Length: 132
Image (cartoon, rainbow, N blue to C red; front, side, top):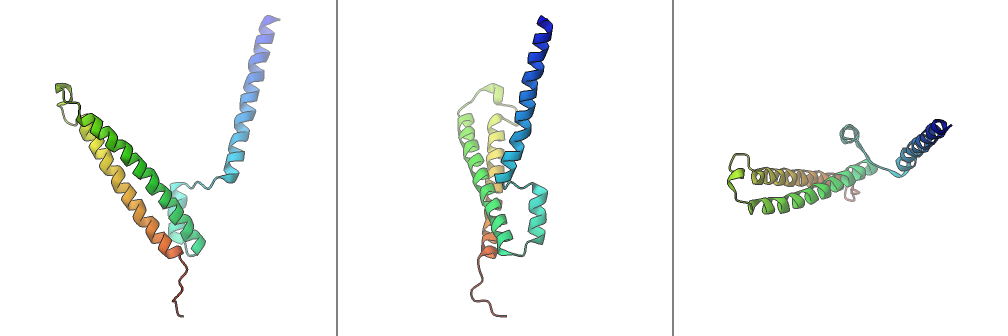
């Protein structure tokens, strides 16, 4: 009887976990506007309306902010690691080098995303002086 109660409690708790996790993606997917990389590439190839360009501009604007934040975090890490001068870190690549390269990468990606956000923002803006 004791084993039965134990097994029943385990099965019952697993059922609650399964039901809770099955409902979570459904509720978050309704309000989410997250795009995958293939979806963004397809949208960039096929975009022709202001709404599509605005979506792309917003996506790349968010990417720019994310990469800029990662670059700022990595710059702090780079500065912290540059203070460490021991013989253990003498072999290349040193931890300071890794932080430096990651900072440069995130800065480059932020600039790249910023250029794309600007491009799509300009395409999304209404063309007022256009004559047909």
